[in-house]
Amino acid sequence: QVQLVESGGGSVRIGGSLKLSCVVSETYVNHYALDWYRQAAGSQRELVATITGAGTTDVAESVKDRFTISRDIAENAVYLQMNNLRPEDAAVYYCHIPTSWKYDELWGRGIRVTVAS
Image 1 (tube, helix red, strand yellow):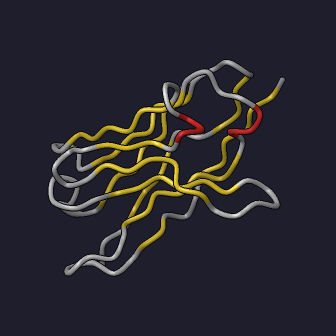
Image 2 (image 1 turned 135 degrees about the vertical axis):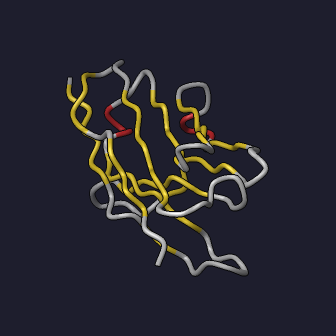
């Protein structure tokens, strides 16, 4: 069964940067889409960024010009580069595989990002 391994979270000051990684346990990122979601305390989970199997990317308006999603096909990994972090970016971030003809929907375990003043 495919697995997602997230890393790179932690605590950063306002204006700082973090890079999240999501490694897929099998060949995936050059064929299928992968998303990053986040969920802040007391809030619903929201879509942050998406990269398709073709490499097309999209990010939420709230993080545009600050967050970038990318991939490394050789590493079978997708990254979320987060710059100029704000307190409202603090959340648990989840790597997510959407349902496709080959895969059932799958969530990573989540990784916490804290933004401190």
